[in-house]
Amino acid sequence: MTRRFAPGLDVETVLEWCDLARRAPSAGFSQGAHFLVRGDTAATLETLGAATWFAQRQPGVLAAPVAVLVLADRRAYTDRYAESDKSGHGLESDGGWRVPYWSTDAAMAAQNLLLIAESHRRGALFIGVFRDPRPALRAWGVPAEVDCIGVVLVGDRADDDRPSGSPTTRGRRPRSEVVHLERW
Image (tube, rainbow, N blue to C red):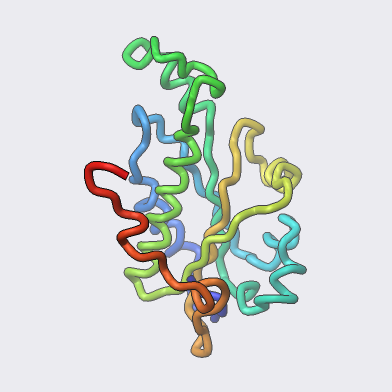
């Protein structure tokens, strides 16, 4: 994950990447993952209430030229599972879903976007939105039934970008603790 960005990535390139990233799996082919591409990361993070935190702790993040809000449309899933070929599972309302696949599928699309950026040797960072994003989403015209699962910042890595944060102080858990064969 990139923490210090440099200018150099245009919005049109990111739009093409989003077109590829949207091909992530989609429960029932509901296709409820959306991307809202914004060309001013600092202003976007300010509107989302995160700019001050990053300015104090990781100011290089604010230099990312493009911010992509990853959005999940739950109604696309409940409507799809109300159709005759999918009905009968109790998934016609969001309360019937044990796992909210609209969020799962949007997260897979976000992962695709991160991998695409990496494959082009560009920088990327996924950040969570820790305050209520609804006022910002409303201002940007996002429908009420669409949730923001996070933001992918993309751009060129700054020459002095280095790993930081938790991965520098915590080791990766060994495979034996997280990969289980046949039984836990």
